[in-house]
Amino acid sequence: MTPRFATPVDASHAPYVIGLDVGSGGSRAGVYDATGREVGKRTHKEPHAFTVGDDGTSIIDADQVVEELRTALGAVLAEPLPGPIAAIGVDTFASSLVAVGADGNALTPCITYADTRCTPQVESLTEQFDVDELHQRTGSRLHSSYTAPRLAWLRQHHGEIFDRTERFMALGEYVAHKLLGTAALGTASAAWSGMIDRRTGEYVPELLDAVGVEADAMGAPRDPQDAVPIAGTPLAAEYPQLTDAVWVPVIGDGLAANLGIGAIGDGIWGISTATSGAIRQLLTGDIPELPRGLWAYRMDGNRTLVGSAMSDCGRVVDWARQTLALPDDITAMDTQTLFSAAPSAGTPLVVPFLSGERGTKWRGHARALFANVSAATTSEDMLRGAMEGVALSFLRIADQIRSVGGSPQRIVLSGGMTEAIPAWLHLLADAIGEPIDHVAISRSTMRGSAVLALEQADASLVPAEVPVRRRVEPVAAHTEYYRERLERFEKLSDLA
Image 1 (spheres, rainbow, N blue to C red):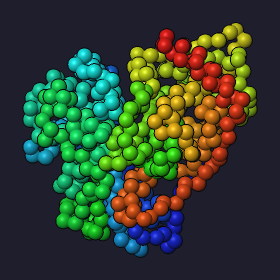
Image 2 (cartoon, rainbow, N blue to C red):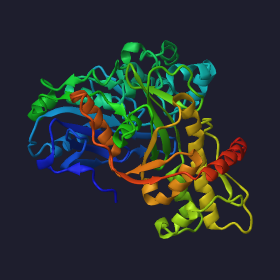
Image 3 (cartoon, rainbow, N blue to C red):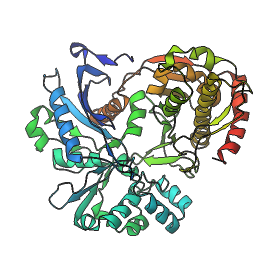
């Protein structure tokens, strides 16, 4: 279990901030001090789950989330703190949509990033736009995770609701609307809609026209420094200890994850290894040309989160456990020997697209492929090959990030998959050719929202560095092997 990155209440330092985090498994609140550490055990989680359907539905009741966060806030504020609360930071799962009527109430559940009912509308919009040119403008591809196809779907299939909608909100924007009376939409969250220009922060008029929405029906993006004073709001009336605090506009969980693990500077990459995986880097200044395989989400007038993701990271481990007759507890295997051994040409070559390909070529129809499998291939060989495939998937993303941000000065990594089998980092470090720091922190996204809140409370504060659990150095000869292996991987993946 990851040790808590926390400090006792009597050893903590003001100013204090609160992080709010809405993920796929629940809504959380936590209190942090000026160092960015959790204060005592001032954290609380309200579990939830998405409602899903065979037709691609993935939704959650937006008002339920509001009440979960209200409850979580009450729990962490139940006991007094030795100093004032200066700010509240908020992150949610990215790319969400709630239709809101003229009375300020939700007309629809929150449609989540995982809802695929708008896939036909993606195809229709793809025919209307030069997708590569649109990618350069918005920093995102046309995909079912983004807002434009969802708006087109809502208009086509639920026209009566569409016509009654006063505002289309992201989930975190709706939370602020209900708790504060101000629908505060962060620029970083608006960027995840795939509808704003990554250079100007304004909505792309052609996209609005294509889906039949006026600009004033969408939230105006706010940079983090455009925080909302909580004084005089319903939230302050409910929790007077928040009267002097500000509410930082919502950000997406990817940005929060980077901030939470310490991937903040231009030269630092953040890698997430959960069910899915991602590499992200926060860059300052303009990015003239964005590689086709990356997304770029504007954070504010000077910073952009650049990166890409894969659908299958920890999911590959789950598949291997279930399909290859491996132990239910994969940690019972000698994965250290398996993954730290020198690479072998006899290892199966695996393209691990079990759920389609996101970065770098965005082929949702792609599926996993296996090559170099013989009668002598063992389940351990298959596991090694599958995890090499995950490492190569990260390498493809790393190559494109290097093309816009240069080689990293540092890589920090977190995630449940690596917690389960930390030895696989040998494969990843060898493939990327860089040292990797596996940091020891849980609830990194909630901490990320708190770190952003600290930045608004006092820009001079420097959050404490997250402890490093282990550093894994690459083996140069192995890196050369994976570079050659990547060429075969790409040729095989084109058949997927």
